[in-house]
Structure formats: C-alpha cells, structure tokens
Length: 390
Length: 182
Image (cartoon, rainbow over all chains, first blue to last red; front, side):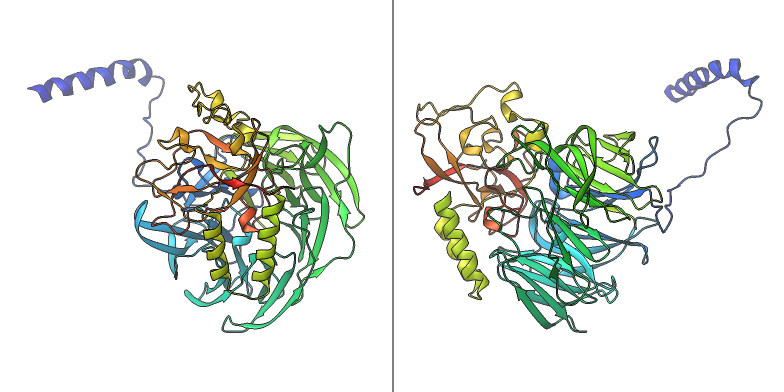
C-alpha cells in the first residue's frame, strides 16, 4: 500500500510538468548507456599540463591533475593518485605517467610501502608498479629533482633521504630495481648525458655520475665551488632549455649548467634578472617553481617586490622575462594577484601558466604578457608544481 | 644562527669528504636534541600573512613576560622558520605533540630572536607524526631557510623521520638552546 502511494506520487510529480512541455518536444531525450567512463587522448595536446597537487590538508592523498589550460569550462580532465609527498613524471612517447609514492597498510600506520606506479595516459588506470626497497624515498614539498628519467626514459632515478642520502636506479620498462647509489651529502637528481645524472652537494660542489648498463656507477666527477649556499643559494628546480639547466638564485643571479655530456659543465657567464624601482626593500625571486623557459630559450622568473631574508617562498607579483645568453631582461609581466609557481607551455603560441597560493590558476600570453583567462580554483587544492607537455 | 651554521657546514663538509653520512647525521640528530623538523606548505604565509591569529581564535600565551606572543599566530617569535600546522592549534603545544602522534627525533633547526630578552634562541621544529595533517593554523616562515641541498637548513623536507609512521600532523617550535654570539 505504501509502495502504491509512493508510485502514484512519483507519477504525479513527473507527469505534471511534462504535460506542458511534451507538445513542444515530440521526441524524448535519448537513453544514455551506463556504465560510462571518459577517455583521454594517449598523447596530450600541448595546451595540457600536469599539475602536482600536494593536497596540504591531507598530504597522504596527494594528486596529479591533468589540466587543459585552454579550457575555462572544463579544465580538469582527470586525476592520478600521488600519495604522501609523491613525485611524478610524464612520458609523451610511452603514453605513461609515473608516480613515486608512499603508503601505509593502515592509511597512517602499519607497514610502509614505497612504490612507483605506472599509469596509462589515456585511461588514467594503473598499468603496473615497482616496489622500492627500504622505505627511504625522499619526501618533501614537491621538487622535480626527487624523481627523474634517464637512459631515454627507460629508467628512472629516485632520491632517498632517511636522512642518509642515496639514489635508487629503476628499470621502468623491465619493472625492476637495478641499484642503489650512496650519495652522502648530496641532494636531488639532474639527468646528465645519455645515462647518468648530476647532484648538488652541501659543501657547494656538484658531482656527475655515469651509469653502466646494470645501473652501477661507471665513472664520476666532482667539481667544487659551483654554489655558495649561504650567500647565493640556487632555487632547486631549474628551467630546462634543451640540455641546459638554468637555475636562479635567491638574489636573482642566473646560472647555467650544460648537462648534455657525461659531466655537467657550469657555463662561464652568469646572467641576472636585473633590478627595478619600487622594491620594498628590493625585488627578488620568490615562490616555489619560480623559473620556467619557453621554446625559444627565454627564461621567466617569478619576482617579489618585498625581497628580504626569508621571502623566497612568499610568491611574486610579476614575472620577468630574461634572455640568459644576451643577459638582458626583455619584458616584465604584472600578474593578477600573487603567483606561487609558473610554467610555460610548448604550444606554437606558448602560454605562461601561473598558480596562486589560493589554488587559482591563471593563463597569460607568453609572447606579450597579456592576461588570457583564469581557470579559477578549479583543478587543485594546493597546486605546487607544473609539468608541461612537450 | 651563525654559530650553528658553522657547525652544520663543517658537518656537511666532513660528510661530503666521505665519512659515513649515516653515523654523522645520527650524531647531528643527537646533538640537536630531539630536534625533528619538518617541512611542508610553502606559501602559507603569503596566503595568510598573519597565520592563526587572524582566524578568530582566542590567543594562547605563555603567561611569561619573557616569552611574549600568541602561540596560535604565525607571528609568534619562535616560528621564524617554521613550515606546517602549529601544534598549539592541534591538541599539543609549542613544545609538545598532540595525543596520538609521535615526535620525530631528528629535525631541522632555526634561530629566532626573542623580542623580550633580545636573545637568539636555537629553535627545533620537531614534527609530530602518525596522524594525518592537523589542518589548523598553517604557518610558513623562512628566515635563514636554505634549499634541500643543505637539508638540515631546509623546512620543505618531511622531517617525520625515525618515527613509526612518517605521516605528518603538525610542527612544534622547541627551545633547545641559546645561539652563540655572532
């Protein structure tokens, strides 16, 4: 009886408004198949970008967001898990995203497992995983240097920190761990040559290592005095122009390192972001991912007018565009609000992408600096780094 | 700060010369005395320049003239290089972890000047670990913070190390000594 009343009520509620409209629409809307899940293109368009969401409110539930910066209506295309201070990589050629993550068997407690998860770029489903031994993966606010490709993207390198420091060499294609290299006093990975990497060390030196076919160290070379960590520390994430890594310092110097050969070479000439009026007390780089490059080799540096000791993560109100080879500043781009991290797409007409501390992502024309549109705070809670689609 | 930096620089150099980093860093951890430090959330201060104090919270103070300030506010003097959620807002205090968490035995340190006695204190930012992020009173200040190339001076690193779980909950700001004269 109750059911009969319910059905009658439902019929009334549905039929009544339909009676008025049905004459206007002779055909009903078609039925829609379920279940249904969207797919992405295996190779992402160049307007797309990967946004690392550290997810500050629950870091163990971090994410990588696949985002179309050209779409204001639906910029968020999909999400890949990136748990507990994870890092990620994107391979255009292999149609894969990789996340280096950490898990506990009881979410916050229990047995620890570190692993690389391999995700299909079209389905965003996991294709496999490689467990990393020792529970030692370097966990930090997202830095690109904790997880990098080498050997033509067939291998990956993972930074470890317990706080003893080492690097794990992983064969992605073979789904196995090859080796662990102790690197006392040295932090992060900058791919160098065809099969090797460079790392920077706490005494201001850098060491380049060449790996053999088994992932063992074939040779290494250390160069002293490439960085004054007290007086001129380099932000740890460089902008890449080909095989040249450009680093900006806390005070606005720009140092280039040629990573094309087996041994990293510091370029002889140091460039500068330049100076400007209006500083309080002075302009300095500030934010998280503070430097980016465009396809022509120009550099973009996020700048704060409130530069002082300790301001280096406060974000910036302008982006300064530098030609590091000619050592000239070619443009200043005022931002809508404070920027925290920046990137430049590899589109034919590149765009400057700016993440703000409130999660808003804005898009500018990289050639002119003109504001194009905002994606709003619509793709990530805590966007910290970008990976551009090559 | 200068004094401690010299210690850590010397340490780094000795490490880089090939001594056992593990044993050396173990020594550092012991020397810092329970310092455990922690990292996280860049930009918190830019987004919310005054930290917890602006959230309508009732101020929490020490009651001592010599240790002035609101411990729920990012402006409190000990937080000059902190990065994370303030344990005072999370069930703990400026020097104790909330129930259910474990204090990390190793950490990174900063040096902050107490405005009341004008002394420079070595502050250990021990993280509290094993429960997911507290989510209250986010605060990030970076005086004398350096990139991870010098980890012991870096607050971006998850210093929930040496604990049963390295899931981060909140950060303390413990006085572990007075800095040497500059």
